[in-house]
Length: 372
Image (cartoon, rainbow, N blue to C red):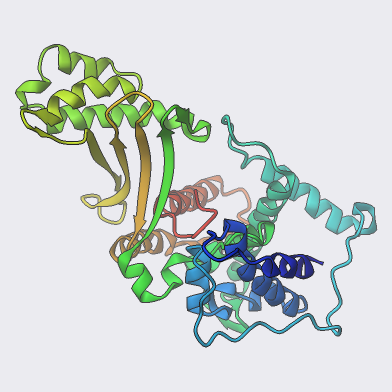
């Protein structure tokens, strides 16, 4: 039914000179992805990977929401009558072991809810993320017992990417209308130029509630960098300096910015960029590129304050190196204690490693969707 509905939208082409809607640009990708999912309904999830099965050009265009202009593209097979559709079942229809697993996933998934304005609870996402957490642990237990893991039909040693890919697949399944794809597996030309992720924190009179809890920290960082960079500027002394220190919003910074950038006949657009850094663990002296805070505007109601992340090859390699270094002891962590028993110290050490890996993962933002 979903493919049929998508086809109807495809037939509703924009008129000549009319701009195509985002829904129209997206629908062809969704139809192809729906066909791909249907063709693989009977394929084990471990043997199915959209990052490798779908063409590089398709994934890049879908992630960037570009028009569906793919030269030489071969369509996914249509719906095959031999492949039975998924039949929804009631919760009571499942066995006791499955029901227990689902309940455990619901409890785990609910812990991942952001306790912040703008993030409403979604039981579907909670359950999927809970299932992801359970499967990650099952994967580790399997590796601790057998030493290897099955990936794409072959057995090999577990890598950090394999572990994260378990969770990524669940994130992809819960929102099949979104291109949840690994950016470093995109065509080399795309990664070379970088994939940008923009988060509008303040746009005019509108503030992003989802990141309100982080706003004070970001504003403090901006003020510190502003005072540090322009500390020797005579225009940033006295009352102007004090106004920066007391600023509680980006609009409060406008008077100081105008004094700095408006000089004589040459008047620049007030604005600044602050690059954040993430400390390395493998090399304590290394500082990895975080995100960039940018503010532009010259009047209240005309201010743009954004957080921008650029995923380039160099930045990706640096983060991968950190995660890979952290992951090294994980495959062997459970061999000494097959069930981890009462070795509380071992459990805490493993948890700290996993949390550190997730920390670098989210700072890298390696997915086209779903990692922020």
